[in-house]
Image (cartoon, rainbow, N blue to C red; front, side, top):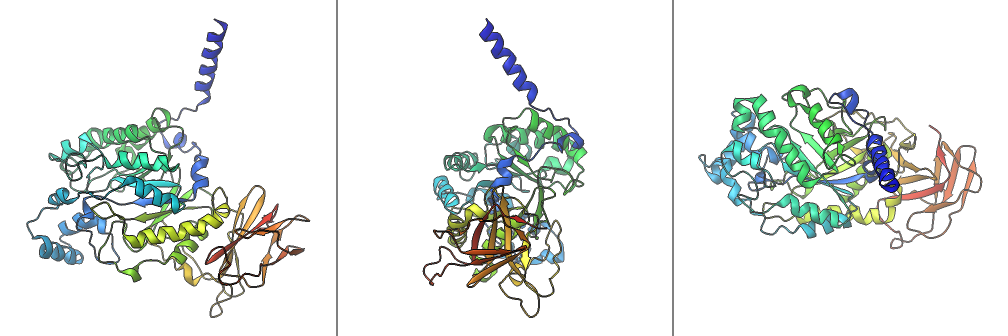
Length: 486
């Protein structure tokens, strides 16, 4: 009896220890962002749906907006309408692409293996985009559309979310999903938005959460309604208090037209430059070229190089953020080889330097600039000019300063990641280094010669031939016990 009583009291105590969140932002925003997300730094976004069949858009625009743009009468969208009429016929309905979304070559294990090799820590597929087509057996999707409108009933005839969730987790990666609150042409959305929210969106959201128990949710399509009309606060209280994901789930800031960069677990930027520092958890998402969904019109020169993507990752992490890098698979379930190559190039770099990325935090100052006038960088939510390759290097460019070194930290070490090879010496300014601190270069055995004078540390770099360097592009040096002087 005493044992049973003790267990009951212990269970009660444990239950009482779990906080309860009220359905209003003042309470919801008190929930801390789980450490796994702050440690992960690098995730993959996956835009995959019926739009992957035409897989086309004007270069510079989002191919996943194909349906919206061919339906639009705006003069700016004429190229979309012309492409559709020429290749499919003016009377070909977008919904008729669904049987062609076949995924016959989709191998979830191959995808998961690629992601693990790329150094990715979390995986975020589009459970459904604004077209409303669900990648899982969503009853709500087919009911409100009045036609088969999920991947189990039409097209692949498979639960794509389940296959990917299982394969991802088998590799030790976190699994979550993107979820669009609104749907462009859902009949119920067009006729009765309050009913759409209560009879379609909310039960559909609870269904996909309960089935796949996401570690992360990227909400989107929030901009037509305030969070009160989406019932977002009630929905998130359910997510944090009752859902099977309540202990580890991370949410973004897209839950109503007033919520971006105001509410949520992490703030989002999109094809922008991230945020300045770690005042709040944040994540920059972008494709490798100009689109999230696969765009067959994009050519190799539209894609960022592996070198640039590595610098983008390092730059964002140095400011306290995460990178959610997108891929757009084809309708047959294959990932375009150029996208695979870019991921693997990042992964090769992370195999050597991941210690300076994963589990790190903002060091107090993100970088060291060379001499010269520092270029201005704007920050914002969407489509902010971010030409990082003009801002990095080991020497000033045309009199302009560049970022020479990026900093990250762990409790016991400071990491200095150079933008290119620093030469025979790496001079770090504004650092506090304890006497006798060991300095190493990741990927190279042995302690490096170094000397400290005031707040300046001079490191003698290893003598490496062209083939002896452990990686390319950026090189990480670890200084034990050191700290940045802000």
